[in-house]
Image (cartoon, rainbow, N blue to C red; front, side):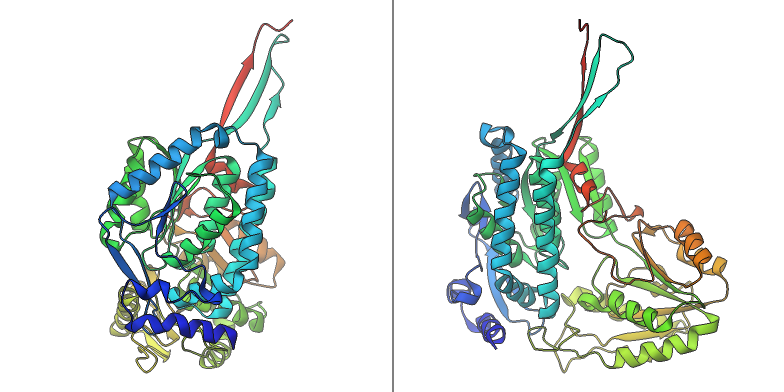
Length: 514
């Protein structure tokens, strides 16, 4: 009841003025809601005074408003981060000190997990249970990198001559520009920022325009944790200014590294913009994940894995299964059991108890999903469930959908749908399945189900993806190295390798030793 009451307070802002949309929400449940950006330890607006509204996709109510910043504002954030990095308090900070700050940030986020989740559901539309799950997941990166900060080791290398000593040491690269997506507004910030800060970098964060309020809530807790001025900066902007701010972060000589999670198309553009300065870059980009079910699979477990992988966050995850390859022998049984599960999904406002499927994030996304399904129908695809917008719930709801009889000229076959649509391809042999699965330039995640041990080892080796779920539909974990191959990205996040994007190795050769 407390959660529902607090979220109702958030939703009442539809009829209030911009100036009141934040201040009227000062109750205990939403004290983390902020209406300013954070630069050099101060909460600030855009230099023009402009703001933009943040809306709830469940009902299109205005949740709040935040500064619509320009390049001039972003320059101030970069300058602050650059100055803080070379300031003795941070550049020479110890791993133990950085670890302590991250631990405090983690504890504050744990204490305020309910409030963070409320804000996330209100601006992203995801069910409350998923928002709470993301808070747990996102917080775990801060805890993990608080510990990893003290394990950024160097090396002593045996020298080729007796009078030499060779050492390799690891150092922070400098200012890190972090550009994060709307689908995981908490975890994508903590996964990047915690690693960068643990390494000794300072950060400038640009959250997605659809979900800046979660990012600002995390920033408020970072401030409360006591990070020095300029170490943690966040700039907000509407879609109209996002491209120029992204270009600035990529081209500024004061920014040493860029980390971006988002579409492959935008990732390619940022990669080009970083090339002029030979800038360190980490990219976690789009996928086109195959979900293969072989004849030997446990069908019930495969169906459960399919539901977990496909419908989390209404299908709006980069590792979501996109193409379902089902072998001849179990195809009909798998589809029948899957259909039963899909029909049982509860759709609605994510703030309501029991809801499993919320709205898509915005009009562009629901238009894209609708076009993908319409394209499949026009080319001979068969809809066995769904395929319609659900306007009775709101403007951004799309019915969980199963499409069969896919062909290779359909968009659902070739592109990432990023929505609640299961696209089914029937296959006969393992070789055929692998040919289809690998026939894309995307290689983020892949899934397959089999109880044939020989097949498990064969397919694990031959499936072209950076991450593979074997008899498992949920693969994300703090301890694991998250990232793809091909056009799905560069670098890894999480795990001990998450530090790598934010440090460089310095080789020290001590010669003429006696």
